[in-house]
Image (cartoon, rainbow, N blue to C red; front, side, top):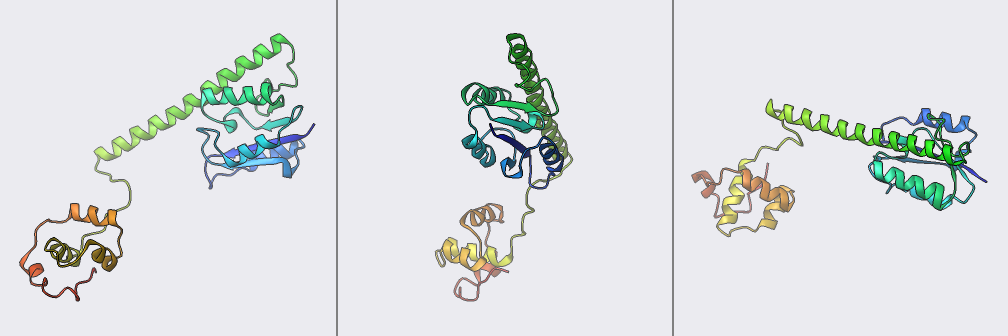
Length: 216
């Protein structure tokens, strides 16, 4: 029997120290602690998938809390079934002593542990959905106040407007404009959509000589 640990935080800037301390206190060797730094919305995580390849019948897996395993109610239950019934390992949830499959091998104990697991899994997903709902409400409220999200738009230069006029007359190609302005095709069309759409006289004056046309 080998003992493993699984540690997960939701992003690169979150700290996993508390989980690591708990793993070491449980006697898990550093080389057998698998980590992920990404969302728990599903189980397509490199650390978790690597862990699955190592687990064998009779092994023991420590996790800090059920939400460190994942946050999707149905997938948590499915992974728990795979780990305990298919691979046949034991799991110990450090923050929830009742979720220690080593202690409940009889029918009643298994029933209680499964019930606790389902409640905690539901609570974990419900909290995730509440967080997402609050984020959506916050974004909607901010937009109502005029707050704009995403990268700020770069003002369209006079040079770009002139080049567009030349492009419409067939004097230059789109690719030439992209190279001169150092922009992608998607940015070209986005700026084209946001431009004034009219060619002023000073722009027209430059149509005969395109060599001097540059984006500023």
